[in-house]
Length: 119
Length: 291
Image (cartoon, rainbow over all chains, first blue to last red; front, side, top):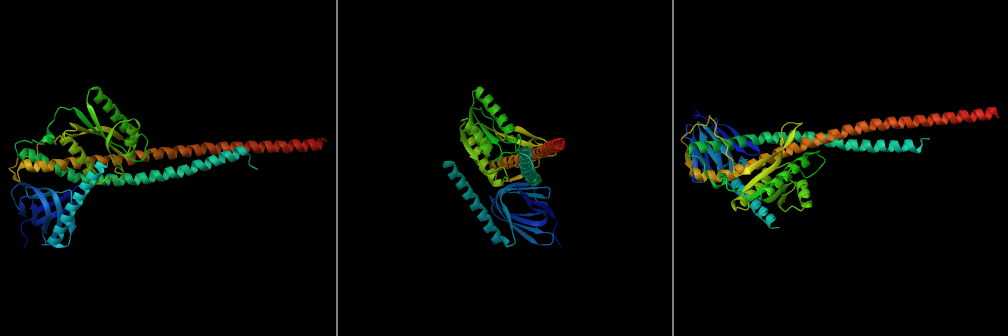
């Protein structure tokens, strides 16, 4: 029997990456990994680079690689705000790899922008 | 045979018709682009809403918001960002927003402020460069289909300038999409950041912050700025396509009218020619019969 469900939205600027009910999610914040079940206390946290795992009502697991963003938990609604997220079917390791890639891509972009300014 | 006059008019009709084909094609393309741009504006909405919600909750949950990016300081140098398009043929789209920005720059200068100018799009760059304005940075190739990366680049630059106190405020001149028929140039202040007002629904819940509220706010505000810039770019893009559609629709209609007038003129010229020929033949025949 599935545990109590809560609502999860993963929102990026150009699209909603994930939206649905879940029994458990885990995410990596700047302070360490966090596991969330239903009726979690109201929390706001900053996300680090790492995988997010979402266990839905049928115990299917969705993993998303995320680089930076925010996590808000309020009244059984969990919102992950991130400007860089990518879904993957490859599990935690794959998600972590993707997250690292996103991080590297952003650093490259920043360096490139810096170079353009100098030019 | 058709005389020189008739031939000339027919040639003009052909040329107008081929122009009309181009303007009609551009109108159709712009129409589909508006729809796409509108979808992208709608898709970015949840992110913007959630971001606003988080900031409001942050304000309500902790003892008010305080951060350098939120504080007004005395304006000595004002940053001005003008958002235009890369291509023309969009009616008054570019000139409206550029004119508004230029007036504002005049006013600021008259008030003794320094200006640092940034431009988005080829048109604004060309306009201000031609008039010997100093452009700190120009971004090109952004406005057709703006991505979040573009917003991040622009956001980072103005943020750095603000933090290093090169500018003390940043105003964006852009075009808001009111409806398919109305787009309005507006002044949109982005720095210092004006946090969204708390609404009655936001109850002060006792949030647990990881890390501290200040640290979260410090990470949140740059993202908020990028999100704002992204919204501005998306709306400017929708406005550009709408303005171009309208301009091209008007051009196509003008071309149709012109073809109608020219066709009538050509028919008249042909008729006059035939009349002349008949009277010449009749005249000739009479001269022969009379002789």
